[in-house]
Length: 385
Image (tube, rainbow, N blue to C red):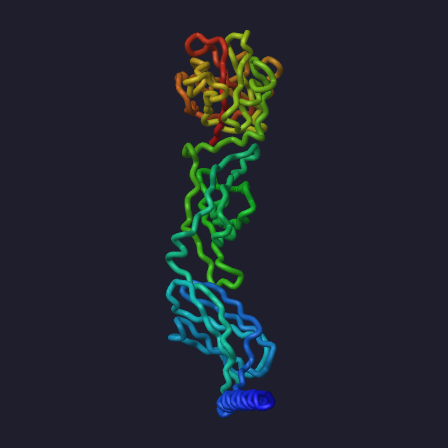
């Protein structure tokens, strides 16, 4: 038994000696090469995109770095920026980079030639592909208010695509070129001094990031009117001052004819008969050039696409002075035009051949299509020169 125990202790001693020998061999192998000294890494790095170029801002808190070397394309390409053993912010721009995303390795080198561990950062160089994906924020409509100011109504744009703001360029009444900066949060832009007969043009400005070297612009697009030369008169400025009848003050109210909602209706009283009419105060003199009516699409019977209870003809009247209480009489009103209506859906527009300034406007319908006594209209639009 004693001999067995001695044998076991002998084996354990041999194993321990062999293990120690292996460990010493491993450490001796590394120590024979000497200690490795690393230079200090950058504290932080910011990268800005540009047109076929990239900008770097390197933040150093130490004064122990002589040079920073920037590698890209799997270290096939490189550039250096002199730090000079000082602290601060150091900038450099790498030009001539093909449009794509890059992975950069930045390595600091101290005065003794020691290098730091790599600091990895991504960046992008931009060009034609980036520009082709930019979307110009659209002007949905150009309206005019009671003061004559032109009002641009904007559509939405996806701000995640680096869009920052829009620019509007126009000629003012003194023939000067004016450029407005329009934030993306602005849904309506007022232009009080647009030259008569002129239209603005607009573009959207893209800035890729906070450090971007370049701004990118969509091509200018000309503002468009639905009907050339005719501006949509802002309905919030217009007041309905009278009407023939309404079936009720709910779903059939006269106010629905001028609320910018093309899905509801003005329905005259069921027991009434033609003529039907509606009068408006435009809040200021306007050269009314066009009036449109929209057949109702509210509460249609099965198979119907529009409500056919339309007027057979429409007469438009205007005046500049207050009409008083008698809105039906023709006295004091100037006839602007008389127009036939069609039995169909969609907008029907009536062009005034010789527009004159009027403050008050009246739409008068003496009879209905197919002998109908009731008139139903979805919406009324008014345009001005």
